[in-house]
Image 1 (cartoon, rainbow, N blue to C red):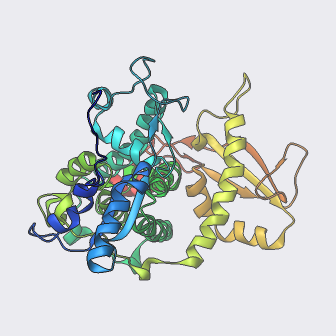
Image 2 (tube, helix red, strand yellow):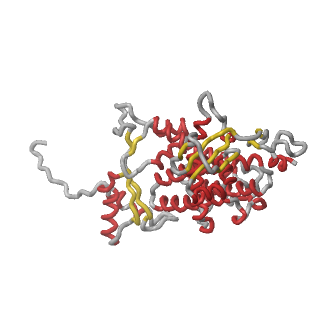
Image 3 (tube, one colour):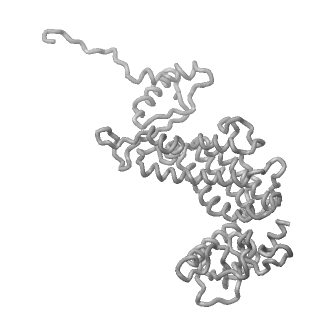
Length: 411
């Protein structure tokens, strides 16, 4: 271009101007939308791009921002935290994850990470996420399976008539509702994921659902004890399916389709109302009591596990056991005495004895250091129906191989 006179172009506009003015072109013209937007969502690279030009055009023309809130996220790197590149061969393709694990696993991974920073993904990370997903799914499957034939409209038990541990479960559910709601409001989806996972895996599967198995399997179909558990399980599942719907959308729809028809007020869980708080289910007194029981159970479970091991093992499963307890703590001893039968159920042992003296064979607890425990084989014979040991096996005429409780159920 030698000999040609050049002039610097002065009519230059920011390349982000078009998208930066989209709030005027879109929010005010599309039916169902409104100005300003509730949320602008983009990557952290848009602080000087779309966010900035949107702010400039809106403030310049209207004196205020075109959005109420902004949410920014980082970028996805490989499992080592390195930028993905085809040349490096470290690209994790979303379609591959969906094909192998399903879309909900990928959605769950997205919800589980702190999106405000750059995040990592790899095959191993996705595999771990699949295991986490299975815990939540299995909790739902267990509840659905054990709620078969339960009609909430005619079988539900009023709150005041529920068994105490069922009231405890509803208390924990209310605490979950509160924390999950707050986390969603703050877009802290990683906290939503952690809270639901803990509730499903620890509070429910490892504790509550484990304890109520005996009631569900051995009590009469229409007994108060069984209906009480089913009432609470359905309440829990109805809440969980709504909680997980924004994240595990396909799984939530599957659960919704298998719920009792009387509970489904909409064709899809995504169309139904959000859950509501039930303050009347909050019961700090019950929570305090069962927190003590959980500590005792934790200490007992360690000894029960040891009693299952080795050549001279004492028991096969926990119902083979008699647990002997000793403590010099007056308050703790009173608690044990007042809740002896409850503890047998909660610890899933056949018998509990509270002694006035101990031997060197006793082991001190870790949760309660002044509680000493010993595991022995349970007295009596094993009931063929509930598997608990009883010294009164066969005492009911016509039922030589089952305990009195089971005899009353089958008659």
